[in-house]
Length: 363
Image 1 (cartoon, one colour):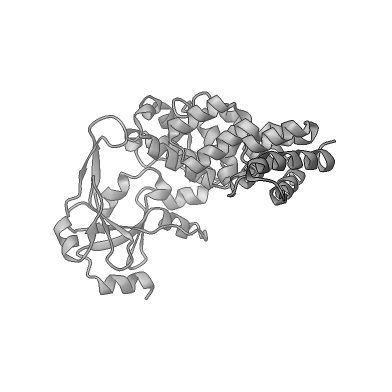
Image 2 (cartoon, rainbow, N blue to C red; image 1 turned 90 degrees about the vertical axis):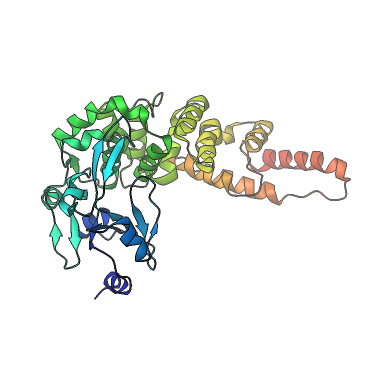
């Protein structure tokens, strides 16, 4: 008996429990990926889950946290589209909803499988066959009802490099472009950020181009050029996002980051790459005064790791060795001035730094 079964015995769940979603997909792929476990409960009610000690957290449909493991348990449900966008749905989570009906509302066949407590795989839509065929295929024509799925499928191409999108699914994705503008920026950002952590982030951009879904969220970006740089340099995580800064001017980068509500730390990194990346690569060719100006504008001499992350990103995007720049900054930070008044200290330190740059760094 594994740990999950032990927890379920300690907490009496008022229904039949199934493991669903990504954890099932990765288990059937024999992939060693640390994926959160999601559970569906069939035959239960909100009142029954609460009575068993579960804490309801879902605002639009009943999702509960297990009182011991803190994992998410959702009541089996069906959905019916009422309006535009990602949230325009009416849900039905009555106890008669079956696991097969719950799985039918999901996006891709490889995500529409469940495993029961007896380890039986419930696979009504051919997910295992599509895993074997390495195919991303929609479950039903209801796929088009949620425009966020365009970005979800694009994300899966980044996470699963050897999978291809079925032609029929690509055709549906192309039909969904008109509702992309109705999505909340936070949800688009989540899919984008997850894609950038994949093995092939470039495929996210390539997929959006293939189905004509670049606008409105990635407007004004040379997305295929970004994809090419990511692929060429094997960029991932923050460096994959930094590729946008390397290939675009500060204005375009700022518009993109604000549109997608990119978190502040990453926003500042990408904007700094756009502002200072090229200058850092050409630093040895500049005069001591210009070197000092670039370092000051890029906050190289301030405490913290922002400049280190900037140099890491620029090196990754440009394939330029900036070891000399790193060393220079470390040496400049160690310089001190003695026997001067506080009023003179800043000016004298600046002069000493300029002299050091002239004698040790510039040509």
